Image (tube, rainbow, N blue to C red; front, top):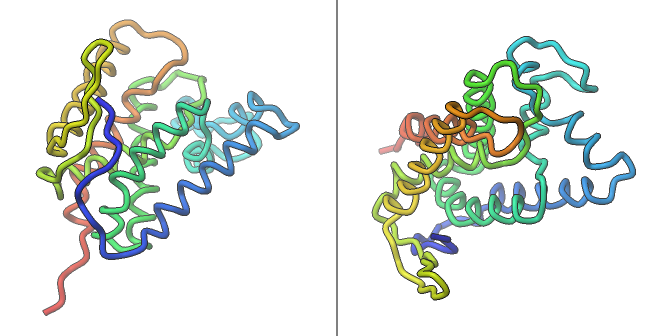
Length: 221
């Protein structure tokens, strides 16, 4: 199931959504072509759970700073492309609802919730977390609450065949959320090094679901 657009028009130009996508792309190109090397960049600016919880670090920046720097680092074209696709589909509507500045703050705080959500579940990990998916998970949670019936154009695969269908956001995001929770639980049962930080997605998603109504601007009469 791969969503690629929604039937949910916006009334603004989503400057923040576009800006975040551009910034993520620029940072990824820097990772690829920097003489510092991609591994050094990830180790230096990725969010390390042990460091976030103890504030101990051998990185060139503080652990708190790495929460934000890690949101703009990605591990490959598919990692970046998948995250930015989801963000473009769902982010512009949340920006439309919250306004530019409020949306930016909401997005960054979702990333903070994601980083600590994962860190609490694996406090001794020294493997850096990178990627925008934790913050984007908060956007998905917000979209699920505000637009559960919005139709999302989705590619469904049936073996070698595929078909485009319009599916309610409740199903698309709900299915995505179930995968995150299930994989997070499985990862805890059979813990390994590296891989996907599933509980970062869970932490960001729960932030979005629980906080979006509190972040909506008050109506003026």
